[in-house]
Length: 114
Image 1 (tube, helix red, strand yellow):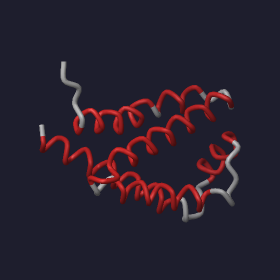
Image 2 (image 1 turned 135 degrees about the horizontal axis):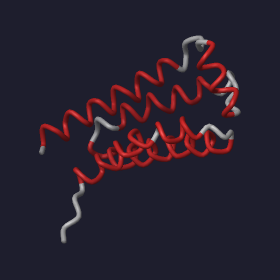
Image 3 (image 1 turned 135 degrees about the vertical axis):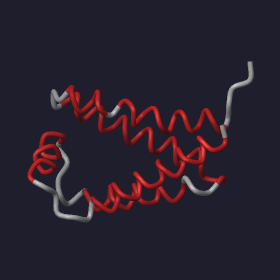
Image 4 (image 1 turned 120 degrees about the vertical axis):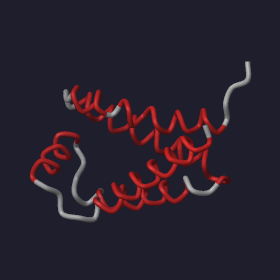
């Protein structure tokens, strides 16, 4: 169980840092269209990038692990809500596994005892 947890933590941190780094790159036409549909402007992207990189780094420290996963989950729910508001149900549904990851990591770290 510990090995799976470590792999998931590293994967989640990598994805957060990668997405944060990608926010500083010029968007592809498909990405620009998706951001436009969600109502996200290009001037906001660097802030999302910094936020995502910080979350990725916070995941690696036990003191900030829980907060990082909560922030990650809130960010994903925000993307899902913006997608639903724009009528893009496919994107909202595609985000479900990414929402499950931080919640699963919290559960692995703090399992409920019944």
